[in-house]
Length: 257
Length: 202
Image (tube, rainbow over all chains, first blue to last red; front, side, top):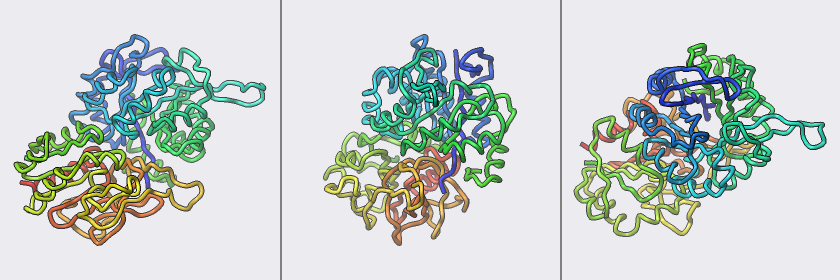
């Protein structure tokens, strides 16, 4: 049976791993290669390196960081942040990324998804969607509004509809982050995750809000997530990857141990 | 030297890094003529079966000649599917035909809701027999897959994996082996499989 994946995200700024709350208020969490090694020992299934300031400052993802991590780790590695063009993607792939994650660039230039899928295969193209809850047009229900530029500007898109379009354009996976929950440890937004996961046939990675072990149980059951991503709870060693996976197995969720 | 065949199906960086990590010497032949010098050959690849059209007659002949000379051949993911007779994904284009059968699209099973296709992530191997390519692999090992098409179970199957249905995850006959998953992305288990191949490749 296919295991549910646990993915550690390294939010990198200036070569160091940092982590904030609600996309702001960053604090230092260590060297990316050191953290990557530790997670690998603990049995992480996949790593994401996110150059969190890249889009704003128009810098490319740090090729040196990618190389340092890819040199010794032989698990899937995705890289995001500042990938705006096919050339940016090529730089990340040449440095050792197996997947590139597009966010703002996919919104402003959707054909880029197809270009990269044709060049590297759909399995190498992740579309990252940052969304937050908003009242829908008749003010009765909730919709999931997509934001670009690290959560700073509304994209006027709905997360479910945008995920469907990304899939049809060739995306291989969706990385769905709840801006409301990011860094809060209040749990994943299971309702949003399930809405997107049920709408597409590609895997959906849930992100934003991981706090306790049961948050992961919830996102894999109620949230219908195929994978779950977390950063701070692993960085500060509050939760080890192995103890999380044991907990999931005890709750009947298939994992790689 | 191991010849790593680059036919434009995905990037080879990860495979090269993994082979370098276990001390294997690798070269990427620019044309089929360079294959004659190879001690063994790996056909990697990911993506659409159409990509294997680049492996035209001269490539096929050169790879067949190596296999006939007893040199080890390993197909990875799409490279493994190409070792079969063909695939539903590109019905008019034949594979190498070393293994019997045609690759088919995963159905996602009959449950409700259906399992997602593509099959992406870590899944377990169920061994049906021993083979040198799988030496030292723990019975409960998991490996990393990413594919929508799969190869059928045949007497050449060494291990199978289930995702809606059971399909071939490792195949082997004589000096030829194939893996549907990505050993270069499957942690220590994957490196061990590559080591098993490299050891035979000398």
